[in-house]
Image (cartoon, rainbow, N blue to C red; front, top):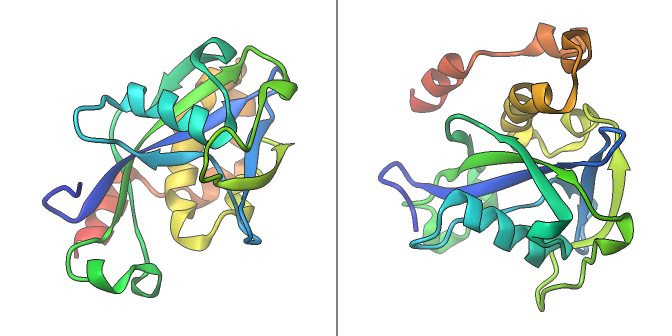
Length: 183
């Protein structure tokens, strides 16, 4: 299901523990790491999709987490052409995502990477909040930055902790990103 502009509706999940470390999953049989994410099915709300993906990808259920917040608007990234399946190249451009920040209310042992018949991750770890910006694949970096910055207020009480200086120096306003991707 694509929107008129060729973006697939999707949810992204930033799961934090009690120390504000983020869940970071290693994609199965790859050397890349990312946050859990997945498509929104027809008739599903973003929140319903988030809970479904949370269980499918990392085995957690609603009772294992608390929603701290979500992004106000869709965040978009374009997938480079060489990463797009041939049959989708004329219609698919990328993902548009609503991001949720969740706090783990359960235990680390509640995480199961084998909750689904088609696992997404084969390893995971807790990482410092801003580490994903340096580690995620390049074409997702802008969306990760936007989501982490916007949702940081739910993880950190003190404004000084919400945004390291180097993030502020590299931040690009949402309006600029929208203009960049349309032209």
